[in-house]
Length: 165
Image 1 (cartoon, helix red, strand yellow):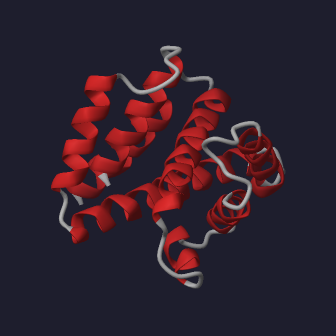
Image 2 (image 1 turned 90 degrees about the vertical axis):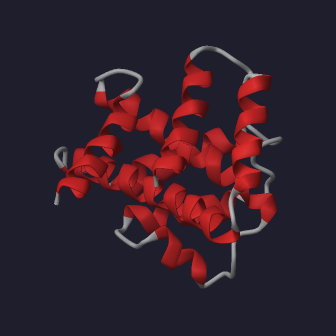
């Protein structure tokens, strides 16, 4: 989970810094780290990204519930509209999968378990999955009003509490 959080946080920081892509040196380092993963470690990072999506949707669900509003009704259409504006990252055929992922998480279903019914993640879905998590983290940051690192802090706090228990 920590590796997934580092990747998403790195991408999010690039967005906030106004970079159109990842720094070439940073990208090289991320690729080296990813290449060093055994299949089980790569699967753990993938599950970590899915867990981040779940945690962010859970937090958003609680935030919207305070206003008697539905998280799926508000978040999914907004993020899908953003995805459709990014055709190089989100090819049209992956948008329904990402919308399903968000909907599953928003209704309390584990994204990993939800995805299992469709088979394993494909390589073509990795970039859209990562970008979905980044968009969701940015959404959390924006509506929290607590700064550009709130989503990362939110998960870091959950991890710290889990380690203490």
